[in-house]
Every structure is written in C-alpha cells, then in structure tokens.
Amino acid sequence: MSQPSKPLKRKLAALSNSLPLKLPGFGFPLNQAHRWKVQSSSSDGYVTNQKLDDGQQRALLLSLLDPVDLHGEFADGAALRLIPLRELVMLRVMNSITDKPGWENKVFDTVITTKWKEEVMGREDIDFTDSMWNWVIAELQFNTERFKKTGTLMAYDSGVVKSDTVIPESLKLALRAAVSVLENIPEEEKDYHPHSNDQVLDLVHPSLFPVVYGRTRINTDGILGIQDGLAKAGSGEILQVPPKEETEARESGYYRNYICPYSQKFQWLPCDVQFTSSLAEETANQADGANPTDCKIVSYINNLHPTSHGDLYGIIEQVISLSLPLWNMTLTATKEKDYDFPCRIEYTSADYKDGYRSPSQASGEDSDDYYLRYDEWEENNEKYELPSPRQDMEMPSQEVLVDLKRDYAETGLQVIVKLANIHLTPEKPEYNGGSWHVEGQLNEHICATALYYYDSTNITDSRLAFRQLSDPRAPDDIGYRQNDRNWTNVVFGVDSDGPIVQDLGDVSCIEGRLLTFPNVLQHRVAPFSLADPSKPGHRKILALFLVDPNIHIISSAHVPVQRKDWFEQMAPMDQVLGRLPRELADEVEGYLEGEGGWMMGMEEAKKLRLELMEERKAVHDDCDKQLADTSFSLCEH
View 1 (cartoon, rainbow, N blue to C red):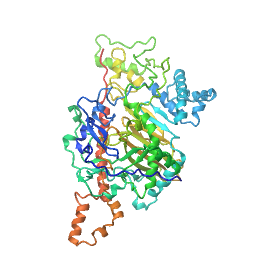
View 2 (tube, rainbow, N blue to C red):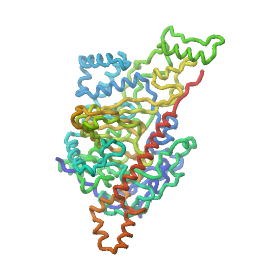
View 3 (cartoon, rainbow, N blue to C red):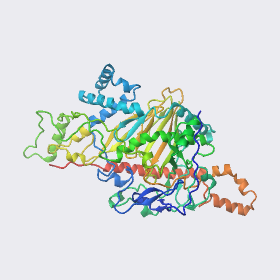
View 4 (cartoon, rainbow, N blue to C red):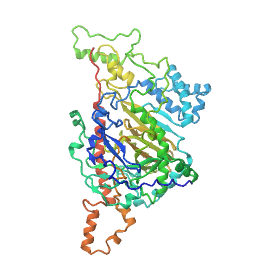
C-alpha cells in the first residue's frame, strides 16, 4: 500500500505584521459574511477576511438556507430554471444509460441503441417520444469526449456530477483499510447516530465536539497546524455567544416569519486545506509511491486523531484532490444563472389540441357551479399538446467557470469531514431512508458536498434523490387561455398557487462512485434493504462538505482540540493532578472540565450533539416550509 503523503509543515503565523484575524462570529457578525471576502495575509498560511468596499458585489455562493437567496430575484437567488416534465424524463433516461458499463462506446452502436429505445418506449410509467430519444442519443454521443478524458458526467443540470473512475481502486482499498481501525473497537464504544435505530454508525462526525459559542476557545496568537491543535489545547480566549441581532436574517423584515438559519450555539468545525505549489513536493510524493495530490490538510480533522490516524489524513486529502474537478463542475452550474445549459424543450405558450373547446359559463349559471363543471370536464379531457424537443439541437457547454485551485490558490479551502456506515442485519433488514435537507446551517457556509461510496455489501440499489426550487416567475412568461390553470401541472408538474418545487430524479450510489452536488438542492437518501435477508449488509461513505471558499470561517486552524480523551492520551489526568493537594486538584479539574472549562468529555459532547441535531432539524423543517410557501399564482387575463 502506498505511503500517506507527508503533512505540509506550517508554522504558527505571527499576526503582528499581518491583517487582523476576522471570521464570522469572531471579528464581524455572522449575518454580515456577505460583506466580507477571504484574504491571504502572508506566505505562511495565514488566512483572514477583509471587508468589501461599499458597492462591491457580494462574494458568497448561493445557499438554499439563506432566505435572501431563497426569496431573491431569479438572477441572484437560488431558484433554478423551471423544467418541463418531458425534459426531466430525458435527463433521467440519460442518467440511467450512463450507468451502463461501456456506454461511451455502445451509444454509437445502432443495434444496441435500438434495443435501449425499445426498452424506454415500452415503459408505461414515462412519456417518451421519438424526438426525445433522438436528442438523448445525440447528447450522450456529444458527452463521450469529455467522459473519456475525465471520467465525469453531469447527471442533472443543477450541478449533480458523478464519476465511477476518478477514485482509483488502490485508493479505495487503502481507505477501507485505514477506516477499519475506527470500526474494530468494542461494541460498547461504538457511536450509533441518535434516532437511527442503531443502524447508522458514526466514525467521524462533525456534530461531536463542534464549536460551542460561550465555551469553545479560539487561538488568537497564530494559526494552528495539524499537531499544534493538540499542543495548544486549552489556550486561547472563549468565543462569545453571538448576539441575537447578529444571527437574524439580513436586510428584510419579510424573512423574520421564518427561523433564522444561523445558530447562536454551534458551528461544525472544518479543517483547512492548502493547495500544493511545489512541483518538487508532488514529485516526492510520486517517488514514495503515493497518488499525486493537489491538496494538503494543514489543520486537524475534528474527531480524527492526527497521530493515531495519520495515514487516513493522507488518504482523505487525496480524495479531496480528486473531488476538485467534480466540484468545479458543480459550482459552475450554479455560479451564474446564464450559464449555457441547453434548454432542450422550450415552452412559451400552452398549446391545445385541434378542435379542442372548453365549456363556457352558461347564462345565469352560478360561478361555483361552473367551476365545478369545468373541473369535472377537464379531468376527463386531454386538451394539451405536450412540448417536444427543439429542432435545433443545442449541446451542453463544456466551459468550466470555477476552478478551485486556480481561483483560491492563495487562500485554500476549508472542508468538513464525515465518515459514516449504515449497517443492516437480518433483525433490522431495512433502512427507511432520510428526509429532504441541505447540509449544515449558515454558520458553516457549505456550498457543495462530495460523497464517496467506498464499500457496499449485500444491499439493494441505494439511491440519492434531488429536488430544486424552480423560478416562480417563469409561468408569467407563458401564454395560456383565460381561466386555464391546469397546464402548469400537466407540463411542469407544479400547481398554480402551490409550491414550485420540482423533483429532478435520483442517482444510484454504487460502490466506487464519487458524487458531488451544490447546497442549492435538497437531497434525500431513498430507502434500501438487504439483498439477501439472511445475511448482514452495509454501505459506507466518506462525506466532504466544502465551505464556500469566498469566506473563511472558524476552523481547526483556530480552535485547539477540545476532546478530553485526546488530552488524556497525551497527559493522563492522574499524572497531571496526582501530585497536587486535593483542594487544588479539584480546583484545577473544575477549570479544565467545569462550566467554561476547555476540556469536553464524551458524555457532555453527546448531550450537546442532541441539542445541535434538534436545532438543525428545526432549521431544515423551516427550509421545507419556505419552499412550500414559495408558490406562483397565474393572473387572470
């Protein structure tokens, strides 16, 4: 097995000759992050934020959690293009075909594509036409060139990207071996996620030992390297609890109807990642037998011991490096609304079938009676001509507008790491799936996620579903007859006066797949079960949550280690306190572990995790409510 890449050495950066350390919740209010931008202050890894000049455009990427993005104008907000149902079906069919081994060659074989067409056209659950199929094949053939070069595919235009080849087999096996050390512990020490029916095993989870405002200490005299987090444990000043007015939704009273997406209590703790700039260093890695990497983790991963699991650090930074091209595609898709995605099916007016005439209101007929009669008639009559793909085929753009290594070479990235398994047994053979959600709260400013499915055994097809908020103004630009409202449901799957949320489709989570998507989409794990109910099975993932690289947040480069068990490994408590008089020992222990103390035991951490989970559930439920309240209403004309 290849050796893990060597950690990048980083000294404590002196702040005296640098810009002051300014981070959301430390130096400026949480809800003012849009007025600040990440800034590199020196050559030794010190990164802070600088306030934007008045009139400068906001730097942050879009988030479905931000009420301003959620309810903003289409050009600036998180609402995406309203997509006809037929076009969504085309995307789902293309996604399914590209799961087939060797599709990039088979798509040019007319014998095979004819068979595929027969399978698709024979399905009763989808509406498909010859013109839709012709477009699908043409677009797939167009996509083969990039796929053969990069191994990546845009599964859905909103930024869902998949690859089954980017992560090499050797790295997958190395990850399994390194993670097994975390798994092979006594049963009583295993940490099953709360409310998961003892099916979800947390190996590394950011909800344990997070930033706790009013308790966590922040180091103010330098930036902490990987080992510094342990060496400087207990140092720094206590992070103050953000005032309520600094966590309220910004700029508009309308948003006060909803729960604020900022937390006054918690923040997940990312690690800092720097880009390698030395060709000699990359050459040395290759000489050691390691996979080449663009990234170095330069501060500890929360809840992953940097000494005990140093090999896992090297593996994770390789996965981060290999995720960069997919994240670039994901963020490109949502960075600019005028990005050149094909409008496969245009819909500018509700077209009606020849000879179709709707019933008119009879003279003297009560309006309520007429609408009841109209609705009954409408249910029994197919009146719309469903739209077809455009005659002039427009292929998707290959341009990448975001290049994380190019655009953030000096300031680097911040990544939140999670390792979790789902275990099924003959006694518990089914996983019920998850709820619709986006990742984190606005404190973390997560802009995209990468999920690597590195081990799956004896389970049925596991899938991740996606849905989007679509542009509520789009129906205003479509022509239709007086009083006719049903076309929105028939053509787009949304009802007038109802939520304008569209289910995009899902992606199979097969072993070896790397999947990325933006935090403007909600996602949900679909239910799955044991393939053979007489044997156990599992699914294991490495999750990487990318912090918006336009802002630097509080990270493990600023927060010394908080875990009592890690400190005791370094200096057992009986050795620290054993020679002190009892009264003094009690006083010191109270300082270390009591209220305001810097050390946090596992029991306390798990209690705080429940508080964090409850708070985030309320925020995610509220996000659902806001989506439901984002509706459109057709005017009478």
